[in-house]
Length: 249
Image 1: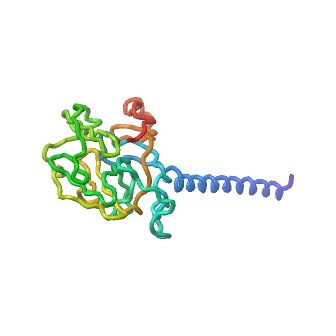
Image 2: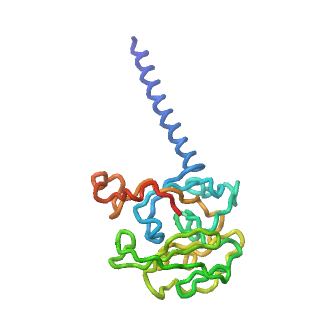
Image 3: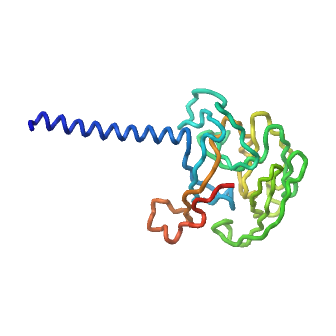
């Protein structure tokens, strides 16, 4: 084999490797844009449903696609295509309206046209109290983020969706609000950790349908203590096996 033949073979091998890498990256981009996007829980606003250190998949096609379905949210088009409105009670990822570079995750409480209000810690939708039943206490700082027992209430929305909420503080800042009337094309979002959630009661405001990214579906990994999933040596003591492959609801 001549030097030229060896050089051609080496060049061809390098070209094939680069081609495989590019194809893999493009495939990953398509999957992330159209199908599933991994998402990590950055705060405790959705406790006890979601904990910091939970890693989950977000279904991108659930609500159709907007500019924010694409990486970096380029302004290529407005509105949504193949739009499917979220259902009340969905746990949804969306772009923070005042700063769309930030991802938020909350529960869909109010649909367009709804009137939403909190009165003495009770949620009202269209002037009807949402059934709220105390089901016990949680005394686990990994779940509640506080070192004391916390009351847990089960809420059931008008469409039958039920979920647990935490009541960290009686007469908290968000326990009594004005009535919010959800505009057309917008949604009212709330965290399940009612006394520790920046949501539509506060600076989040109403969330435009264009800002929806997808629906949270399944937890595929969970680790406590602020550890990274790459810190494999911490898995035996900090991984939460009971949360793996749990559906988000």
